[in-house]
Amino acid sequence: MKLSTWCVFAAALVLGAAGLSGRVQAEKDAAPSLGEIMRKLNGGTNSMTRNLELDLKEDEPDWEAIQESTVEYTKLVAGLQKGTPRKGDKVSWEKLAKGYADNARALDAAARKKDKKTASAVLVRIKNSCSACHQAHRPKD
Image 1 (cartoon, rainbow, N blue to C red):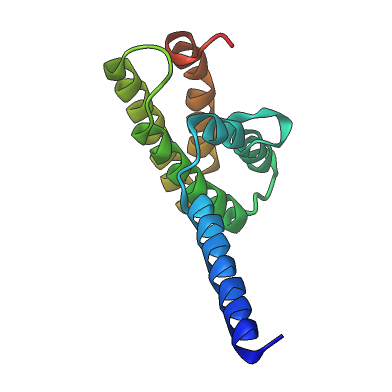
Image 2 (spheres, helix red, strand yellow; image 1 turned 135 degrees about the vertical axis):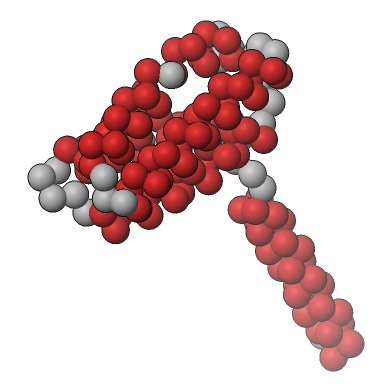
């Protein structure tokens, strides 16, 4: 191949890789869906809520790890407030999501204070609020 052909080929590879890299980064930067957020927060035995619950049952909780989790938890719940449910009205969603966000912030505050009793009580409030929100906003797929 001629040098000019190699240069064009190399430039095409670089530009293609840059475009692909940009798309991959955009996907990483994209806000997670409501379903993705809910699965991470509450999806089964390895969810953040369940892991925090187990961590708080320890005699000597690992407060550093708990605090890292509650910061992430609060960010994820804030993402719910920005979403739009596929079922139910927006006013109800905003009210319930605000309550969830308030509880997430209370959980984070209790973790920063290393207040096991309050953090555990907030998790109970969070878990008890699930069914009302799901009845109003979770589609029956």
